[in-house]
Figure 1 (spheres, rainbow, N blue to C red):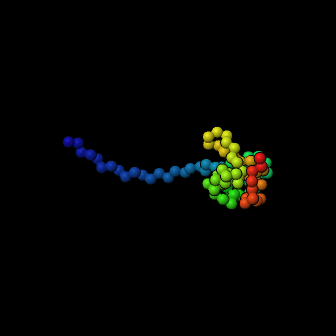
Figure 2 (cartoon, rainbow, N blue to C red):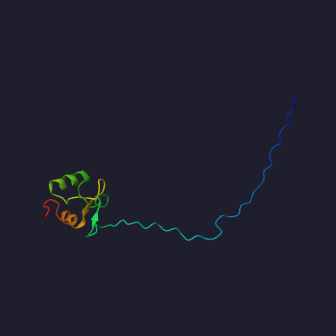
Figure 3 (tube, rainbow, N blue to C red):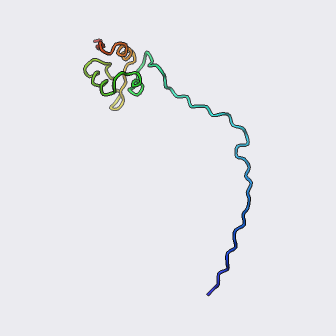
Length: 102
């Protein structure tokens, strides 16, 4: 049988690292995202853009649209629904008396 030598404790080696960012970096700016505080007067909007201005929840708005008491949705495929901003502004101005122009 071989006898094992006792292992020696490891010596501590101090390492000096150079700073990674030697060149000063410009301050980071926030990303610019399109998040208007007002509903545009023209164009089309999705529910996610309308909900902060709507006095009713999504399901109530859908029901009102079905009854003709809110702007009608415009479908662009199965999962993409838009609403006309001009009609939305008419509805937001007077939601109780709104009726679709035919």
